Image (cartoon, rainbow, N blue to C red; front, top):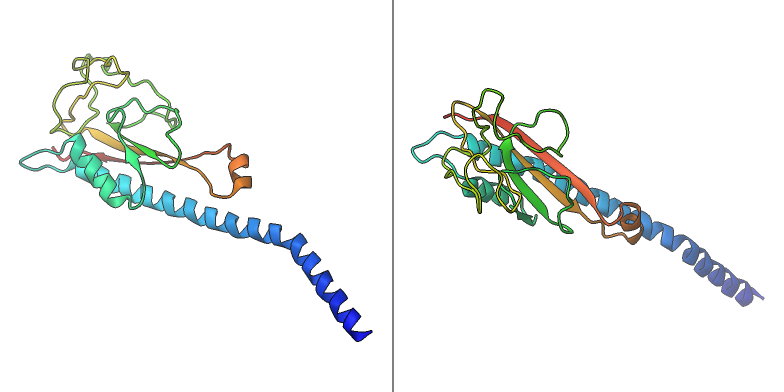
Length: 198
C-alpha cells in the first residue's frame, strides 16, 4: 500500500513538472533575451558615442568615414555592423537579422529616422554629412547629388558643423514565442551628435 502511494506521488510530480516546465523555460529564455537586448542597447550607444568622437576630432589628418566605421566596430564588441550608405539617407528599411547599419550624417531635424536629406540648404550651401577628411565623391554620382545607388553624396563637414553617428540594429530573439511576437525583428537604434572641432 505504501509503495503504491509513493509511485502515485512520483507520477503526479512528473505530470506537474511536464505542465510547469514549458512556462519556466519560456520565462528563462525571455529573461535571457531581455538581457541580450539591454547588452546590445548599451553597446550600440557606447559605439555611436565613440564613433562621433572620432568623426569630430581635429588633427593634421582629418577623420574619414572609414575611421569612424573602424572606431564604431572596435567599440561594438560581438555586434555585426555594415555601412551600406555611410552618409545616408537613414531609412526605415530593416537590416538583415542580427546585423546593424552605421550612418554618419548631419544632425536630424525632428525625432524620426526616416528622412530624405536635403543636400542643399535654403541659402544654397551644401549640408555636411561626413567627417572632414572624406573625399567629395559618391559611387556613381557627383558631389551634392544622390548617387545611382540611392546613397547621399559625401559632403565633408567644416566650420563646426554637427555630425550624427547612427546605428540601426535588427535584433532577433532566440525564444521562438518572442520571435513570433516581434515578427522576427526588433530594431534597436542609437545615435550621438557632436559638433566638429574643425
